[in-house]
Amino acid sequence: MDTLKILVVDDEARMRKLVRDFLVRKNYEVLEAGDGMEAMDVFYSTQNIALIILDVMMPKMDGWEVCREIRKESKVPIIMLTAKSDERDEQLGFDLGVDDYISKPFSPKILVARVEAILRRSGAASGEEVLTAGAVQIDKAAHQVRIDGKLVELSFKEFELLTYFVENEGIALSREKILNSVWNYDYYGDARTIDTHVKKLRAKMGDRGSYIKTIWGMGYKFDTKDE
Image 1 (cartoon, one colour):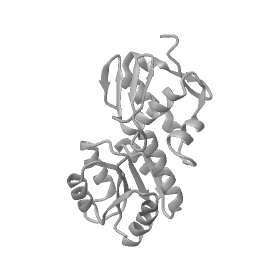
Image 2 (cartoon, rainbow, N blue to C red):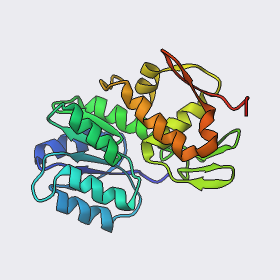
Image 3 (tube, rainbow, N blue to C red):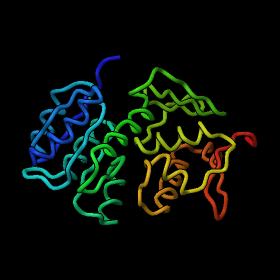
Image 4 (cartoon, rainbow, N blue to C red):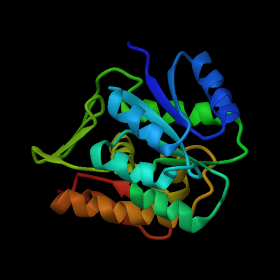
């Protein structure tokens, strides 16, 4: 397998070196950018970037602006580094298509673990795999979803959520379990994040959105048997 490329964007050279050193030890190829404009230059000039680690507060072009521009072109996974733990910031990030948050200061080992978890679920770090449940077909390697044979455009987090549901078909899943599994480890988010993403996912699935059953007071279950 080719070495996976990770773009690290932070205006602090010391922070970039810290993250780079830990990722290189795990055999990732690390690209760096010191501000938002440089990040966009690297993004447009480099093929097959597997994941972006993006600081929020940067000169020239902040992390939100970079995320908006990248999402116009790509669904590459994005982890935001933020010095603030503001719920409004997190909601904005999820609306823009951010896949995970890590607040500074953080443990580099935890960052690497989250990087590996996202890459594993995105299919970038594994071999080709196709999942099928009812009318839903998920190609993890190509990062594509087909429902009733038609290609459906999902955000990265919606793709992860649907994949998790299909992999656990017929199993009742609490909101906390979904958060820990799809949003990584000890994510301290509001469980309502799940409800927001499920609502969007159901809408994009059309009639097949009924596969996602609500279990009142607990969470959700993906079940195709009644269809």
